[in-house]
Length: 439
Image (cartoon, rainbow, N blue to C red; front, side, top):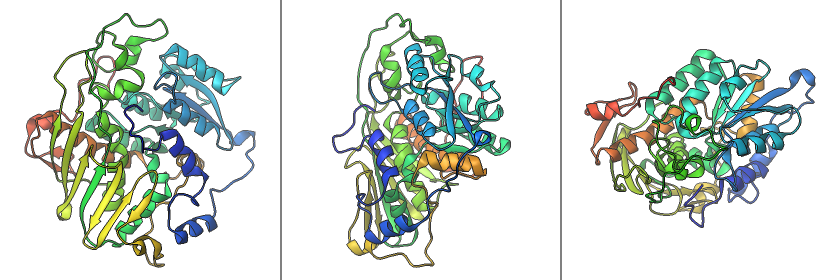
């Protein structure tokens, strides 16, 4: 990820530390002890018939740096009984690196549909840019594969709904890559909020990074190792600009949603979890922000933003690029702040006093990919299903829609998933996909 603040924990470090243990995470001693005593995921010796064959679709990111799709696929390969047998990439350099990384027997494909046609593949890990998620995920589920898909779940509200509905209709196991749900700090914060430790919630701040401005960048011949038309896929055709691809695709609305979706899909997801809104959402949104001047060769997402959501009960949620990265819950009796590096509260007793036996306890996972693989074996719902991922991404998309409409206040019906006061905003719940792609 680019434009990272110095005090942010990198995604690579986050994924590693969340699976190592709880001793040094800043969790209260009682919870660390409880977690250490709890049994871990069931382990067994996997015979040949138990092997889960994994395929990675979309390995890229920033060339020369950590690539999320490759990292996720490696994480799946590290789980007992799992083997990567295929990868798909439209960047031929990344494709060759992927085949090499997973060794003998791994076959590479440029067209992911050829990979999905293989009956021996059980699971696909999708790490492509956001504008590809819906098409790839739906195709995979219809091909009988279980799916781990990176966040944000989809580029639009409509596409997220189509993914969630397809997961339900096909009965496939689906995990959204919102890894913070598998971190004990975030789960603890949400449990404390759910159990009233800081009283009635009045306000939440989801503090995100801001997106960079940049451009205009030159249009160039696309490189020999990149299938540019395939990279664009369902997005509008445009001349090749290097900065549209790999890690910086996040800064173009054609392919992503800036930091509102890239980090908002993490922190607003935790907000939804804490508020008990996994199957619902806010009832209104209004945003202010700074958009760069339009230029087809420049980044076009909002660089600064303050998005205010109204939740049932009058709870106000602010998504902003100001302040220390993390989520701050403010209640009548105190506050809790949680990030990838720490959890703290206005009073130590809020965290240090153990929860009673009758307390609300949330789904527990300390290994996001491990949770997914275990659920594949047991045919159970993982910690962040397609429905949950869709609802959390929807909150992010609502904020971007208000931003792109100049800060209009939009009323939202979470049951019908539509705006009740703005036809133009409703039209922005979906996009026109370039033929032949559709969902």
